[in-house]
Image (cartoon, rainbow, N blue to C red; front, top):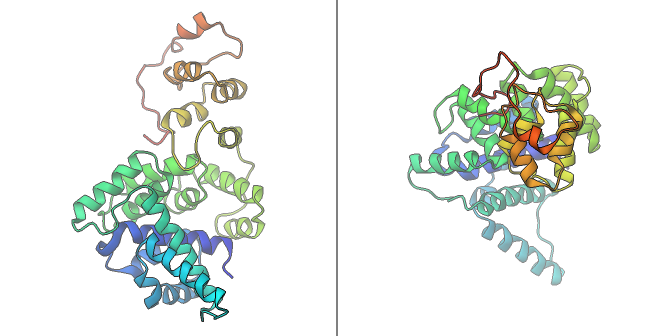
Length: 307
């Protein structure tokens, strides 16, 4: 069957295909862009592209059609009749069905007839923090597919996804953003090893080099996911800004981010976090009256938070 790297590449491609619809006329260019992001060889890319262009896959354009297909398979199974599909085609159908379901979960209009409206819908989903759409929009903008080429805006979206510990976002960031490569490589390597994908980590190291250890900020974000503080599929600018602040100590970050006291987090995230340091032991009054360190100017944009 397909390797993990191939599966996440196919899912990302099918999601991009679903949201770009008929406006992505050159499917090969779209497919090639995602194949390169996920480090597929040229031979594997060509083989898979032939498979995804089959009439059966092309005809499946909604979650409803996917569910109808699955119900039909169950019906044949009850009658002891075998559906003649090879294992790879079956897996491709499931991966595309999952991507279509994700697009419809966020109520993305699949058959939008106006290009500008389709792009605005995608932009709206990305701006709301939907991580899968941050990745799709980022790749489309960096490549100039459907949306027009705008690498700066594309990287802005990919940085948000990458700093939100999105595996797909980190792969895309490694391809398009050389400035943060060392940090992204360390984060991706840590995520892959944590979930048992050592072969994929080895492939990444083969292309981008050996990775260092992931920083504490990444581990804190994983704790926040595990405890339900934030959702893995929805980027939070406020949480990212605090987690990646260089002015706040790691223990302080953890106590604020994981605290059930939402008011405490709101107060902390309102501070100019790139300019002031919050001590571990503080009184509420001192905390509320915290001011930037001398020499800093309030309002400096936070470039690490992606916006």
